[in-house]
Image 1: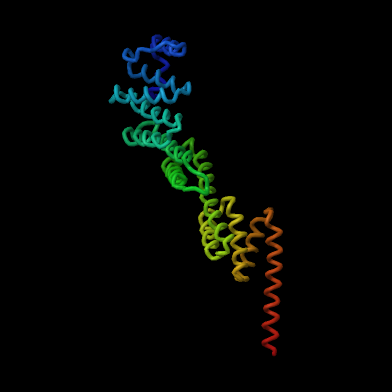
Image 2: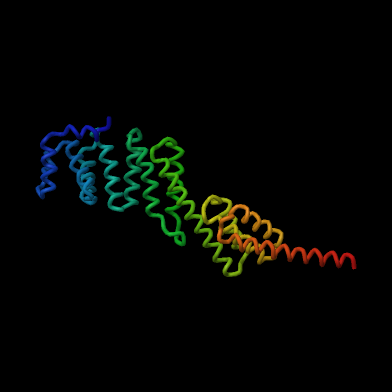
Length: 267
């Protein structure tokens, strides 16, 4: 069983010392062995003293290099940076764990936490999505590497949120071109969204506005086909009635064109 569990067997000295720390007394770190030092540093993290925990776990990785408890220290050093919201440094420390201790039982969680760090750094849809992409890739790789992990459902939930954010980014791009009247460019954005993120909430509006752009470009047959798909897929949409009305209007236009062509042919 992992060394963290063995901490239960630490000396009475350590237990008393940790209590004294809580009362304002200082602990003599030089007198602690590796497990005792770990318990002391971990107690700081558990009490939300993230910066102090960083200091102690860093010191521990230098002082006790080679000790069997070092992967514990390395993992919780990364956790301390995460606690302190220094996510990029946390990523580096989690990666150090996975690289230096590939057989550690912490590897799976560290792999997940790297994705979570990037998730925390992900910006709003209208801004740069570098960290969104990194988080998405990390979570996807995590599920592939650890398909039965207890973190799988959380990773899948995060993946959906990240994909939705990327879809919103594309929707914003399409909407910008549409409002400028550059309908061909708008359709390109909507098509990319519908191809890559068809199962996210923004796909609904992308499909509707794609049809509307086709209508504005007078691509009537394409527009009526797209509006029809929209009404079949999103029956509860607030745009459903608008789509139905558009279909009726386009059908009326097509009927007029057909009648006109028929009349010219007879003439």
